Image (cartoon, rainbow, N blue to C red; front, top):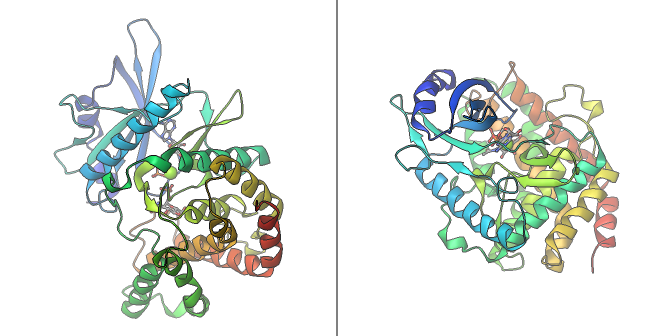
Length: 372
Ligand code: ADP
Ligand code: GN1
Ligand code: MG
């Protein structure tokens, strides 16, 4: 079934989930590449309107939605306790799952689609690109703080929702297999990109090696720290809530740092077709570094800090390789909006890697400034 066909069960899901009030309407919402997200409104008896987020989980990607939702309930209830202890607002500072009427944290409809709902975080925005540097800084503090809050979370209780998610060498093997198979006869036109990635094979192994030798510690990380996975409070301008918790799993701190740089410190959009616009903005790089380290509040080791630039490069290389793999495999993973969209996305990532290579010494020097 296609994504659109799966979404046809939305009416059934609206009936089955324990929303309060009378249904008014729903619209598609957000710009994530993975799930199908809707904003849905209900009228309350006092006349107020309550908003919720309703999502069809992408069960082709997250193959075990039951385990996925156990992770999310587990992590959010842990965060709720921490937020309560510090006198925060649990309705806005973490995700709140709305259970189905049968008590489950999700609903499995007759067509086989899986649905879940959250309270809508009102008076907050998520950005697809950095409009004000302060927002990027706020996202850095929030992601660093998020990682710090989860420092004493029991990692063994987490399911691995996508095995080897940031295991770049494993991703490299999958990429080579896609090139070999070339099911859509697209490899010929992407030879320069294939060469670019093959040339950097050794570098892609470096961080996993440091994990194996114990030089980099395993932590509980978010793993998908795009700017649009943070809600920024409209009034205070502060990062209020980390969202999109599907990939919270054991990982390296530099993954979270690196993925944010990849997305937010790029001078162009992830899918820009004019590659001359793509580069690393060093001011944003510095701002994020400062905010992330503040959010982590001294919890990173010297080695982790030293490896931050490599985290940025690794996440950009890996993401470019994932986009290219999906292009070669017929665009089944990332939602595309035009032909060649994943190839365009791949090219921006590789161009960004090239620019990081040119700015490497300056990236290192910036991070050095923040080393204790
Ligand atoms: P995807 O995995 O497809 O990226 P997300 O969970 O990130 O899906 O949701 C997509 C978008 O929906 C987010 O970028 C954000 O703008 C919005 N969103 C998600 N959850 C909430 C929420 N609880 N309150 C307000 N907006 C939300
Ligand atoms: C996906 O779900 P979303 O749009 O926040 C992807 C990330 C990629 C990102 C690239 C579960 O993130 O890993 O870095 O697209 N999420 C998953 O934009 O694969
Ligand atoms: Mg998202």
